[in-house]
Length: 383
Image 1 (cartoon, rainbow, N blue to C red):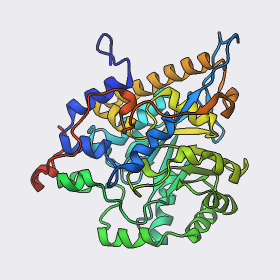
Image 2 (cartoon, helix red, strand yellow):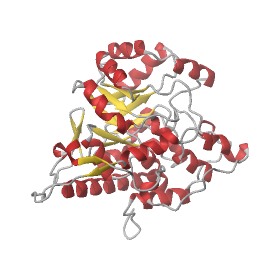
Image 3 (cartoon, rainbow, N blue to C red):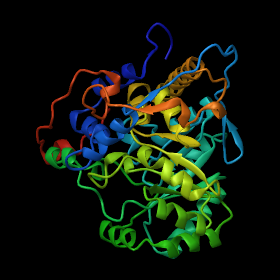
Image 4 (cartoon, rainbow, N blue to C red):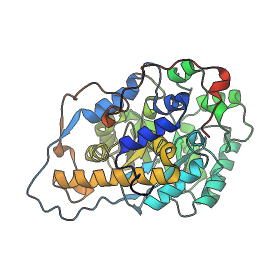
């Protein structure tokens, strides 16, 4: 994305994505479950914290580097798991993995993404790659999938636990749109929907214990909002507790993960790492999450938008912009590194204006609800 056409803001990436995508795909990317209260609550949690900066500190050198399970990375951020990446670019997860490697951040690849894990690894041999799992089979299937992750040199496994059933995403329902029908599930083979639904609903703490006994790969558990569940994660040997309300796309009227960080951090008491996602679109969002106790912050919708806006180069540019914003925020807060961030630099405040998923980007408002399309249109994918 060479100058002068090179995007300078995350808002520009979203504007280009919206122009590139069919309306149902844009709604799939930016929408949430039912009333979208959980979706908006993610933004509300971020906007409900204001900075209290310190001044007259030497911030001539800023280090925004972090680590992922001991591996040095450029920013305290990672590409969160997104299932239908081929909706946004033909190279799909391969493009994102290459971008992550170029930007020196990890990528958590969804088992629902395209192409296969093996193809992504071949296309991005240097990426810090994590395989995200849904329970899409029995123990034999899970064992085979773990073996694939190990063979593909994955740095960890990430089990998503907040999707016992699929959330009711009303934008997709009104659009008569199905992302599952629009793209292949290259990593699942010929698994039937009814089999998948039954097995996902049977996920339990026994599965966590079985996984920990089955592999030496670090285990991340994604979808934790309760302090008690965070304690149970630690008791079961989980390496990373990943606080998330699934981007507001599963349970409507759920709390925002950011609002639970304090309780979860207290519950795990340093015995596991703490990741978070949910509406993160700016470097200041990353700074707030770090100040509230998160080690790393996931990028979901922003990743999809950047991929639609410019493919691999778009995702690289997203990470560059967020890095620039984060370093600016650190300097203006009087911090030279992430270790100086903490709750003492934040105050809870009344947000300015009503929150929406993209309100922080100041984009032109989109229609409140989509217009239904035909089943044929619902299967369209971008060229």
